Amino acid sequence: MIKVHSYESMGTYDGPGLRLVVFLQGCPFRCLYCANPDTISFDGGKPTEIENIVRMAVNQKPFFGKKGGVTFSGGEPTSQAKELLPLVKRLHEEGINVCIDTNGGVWNPAVEELLTEVDLALLDVKQINPARHEDLTGRSNSQTLKTAQWLEDTGKPFWLRYVLVPGISDFEEDIRTLGEHFKDYRMIQRVEILPYHTLGIHKYETLGQEYALKDTKTNTPEQLQRAESLFNEYFDCVMVN
Image (cartoon, rainbow, N blue to C red; front, side, top):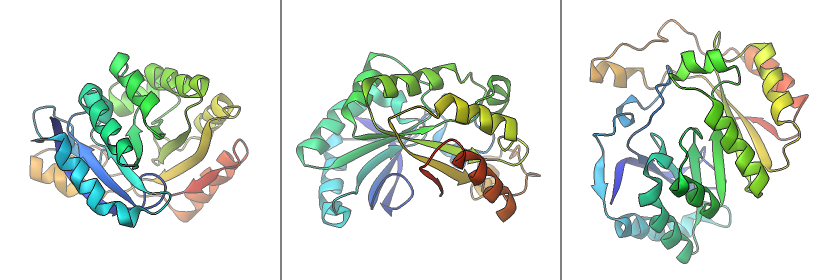
């Protein structure tokens, strides 16, 4: 059984092509800008049989084309790595491409096997600066960087994703540090700059929680262009999502 929060059909932002995005329940990070705070608790979600998800994916397979497939997001999908493994294998039996969107902060033998099995990892690096990362997420970034190194060393393709939050993750020194850290990675297929948004604020209100970044404004076009220019100094596969 997989604990599922929700689904998005025909998603275009979470991996290549058109995708069925399955949002799983539970996450160890506490990102200040989390757009899905209702996925954080490990107590929520709907227990779902693997074959139910397989049937849903097979029904949508005609729309996937050559590049599309299924992406597991969250929450943090690697928190359910043991349960996800047989599902990923079943999807592959049906000829369906599988991506996983992960913060890279969970590691155990099941996670290692899961990342070996998927076709593509979307690795969210929240901040390269350790102190700022901990302020932003409540957790260290050391395992995220170790996961990135494992992906590189084992030859697993991945996309590097970076949410650009004004005053939190848009410092030039941090972007340059990240660039220097990852510039020689061969397995990075794409570097995605994800603009900061406030679309999840209403969820905090529903949950009776205060949104910590309520005074943080969304990116200006100039801020995005500046960040893109900085990333382009280190990578030739940068795009603003």
